[in-house]
Amino acid sequence: MKKYIFISLILLVIIASSIWYMTNRTTESSYKTVRIEKGNIVSLISATGTVNAVKTVQVGSQVSGTIQKLYVDYNSRVKQGQIIAEIDPSLFLAQVEQARGNNLSSQAALQKARVTLADAKRTMERNKTLINQGIVAQSDFDASQTAFDSAVAGVKSAEAGVTQTRGSLMQAETNLKNSVIRSPVDGVVISRSIDVGQTVAASFQTPTLFSIAQDLTKMQIETSVDEADISRAQLDQPATFTVDAYPEKVFKGKVTQIRSAPITVQNVVTYIVVVQVDNRDLHLKPGMTANVSIETGRRDGVLKLPAAALRFRPKTGDETKALKHGGMGQKQGGGQKAKNGAPNQKVYILKDDKPVPVTIRTGLSDTGFTEIVEGDLKEGNEVIVEQIDKSKKKSGSGSPHMGPRF
Image (cartoon, rainbow, N blue to C red; front, side, top):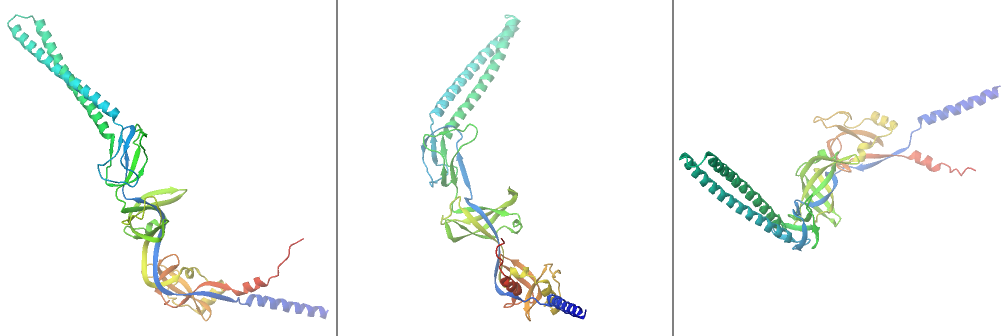
């Protein structure tokens, strides 16, 4: 009986020792740190867009017909009023002659109506004198009065006919004039969609024959900016961009327009931001795809904190020890705000091989760093960005490899 009691006591001691060891052992950990340095922080909005001329005019035709002559081609420089194409004018010349003949006929009819009016007026006045002398009957006077009124109406009808035929003549002459297509602006022809012998139909809508860029030395990029970034975009902000044609060259521009109309594609809302570019060397061509970076903020020579340091938090046990150990800058808690309303952030440094929290206030951020505005950190201090658990690595590396089950 004593033997069993002794063995039980030994087992209890072993179990108690194991429990004490499991609950009181410390995890062997190390920390990866990064040195705080001074440098420049640039906040950017990244977007893509298309390079286009600032003003592009679509030249069309108001009349239908067959293209008879072309005077310009791609990349041709044109002046305002210069003839760039002609439509076969034969049909329009015939319409002008027909309208002119109708107009002359209506003018002759008007002249005839005026002669008839003058004769009816003389007859009426003569009968009016004779009826006072009792020579003609009342019925003859009434007949002459009716003829006079009819002649007056005939003159008005003839005048209306002249006006109508004059309008038809003007329309025919305008169509003849429109058969000669002229450039509306000074610029460069960037596209041509017709050839000699091609028939142009302008019945329902005006067909586009040429596209003329008014000034290729000034270009603009219409970028699509995500709704999450549009609040940071402002007029006159500097921008840089690259195009695939010149991958090593960085072009510069500035924001000239922020459009309020939303564009929704597959539930993604974007807004158009226009960037104006100087293209004096004519390297940029309409239609090029541009990768644009809009500078929304810049700080030069400031303390740069790695973004990973703001995301780092020690494990529960280490954080409790860090708080007991005491940290720097604890006058303001992590959830408090500084005087100007900016939220405080908490980062960790190593002190006696333990993570110690430090309260700071941050400013501008870019993709990898954040500006330190206030706090007890200085250039050269190292902040923790990652915690490495050595014990897990050891246990993981020493675990036996189990073979396949059969």
